[in-house]
Length: 171
Image (cartoon, rainbow, N blue to C red; front, top):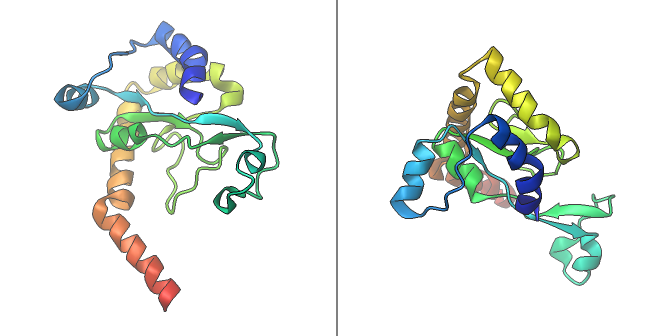
């Protein structure tokens, strides 16, 4: 899966430059850990070969736009949303490159740190360079992520979006 791949391709290289907390926590300890973090590895998902073959009898998985042999399936992670709410810079697969679509998209390097699986080994050095030029860069991305998620994905914002969409559809 994505998490396992990036554990070897990214986390080991990040750990050379940054302290990585790998504790598995829950409840209040988890929220405290998030509150004390500057960035969060916020990805998940699995690789699948041609999804049309995998789900050939299920219309909801008939993705005509896939023109590739391998796809990433269900790569969204609750960690992305939690990291954003806690003003931690989410480190997530590149939304645009990997086809994750939201009504209001986050901007890479503004609301999250994008991962390009084709060049994942370059990310740790890019982060180091970014922090050399602006030591508060991760804090800024985290704050931007929080503002973005609260503006567009808070319960009130989602309810307004759904009601507007339904209203347009039902005229």
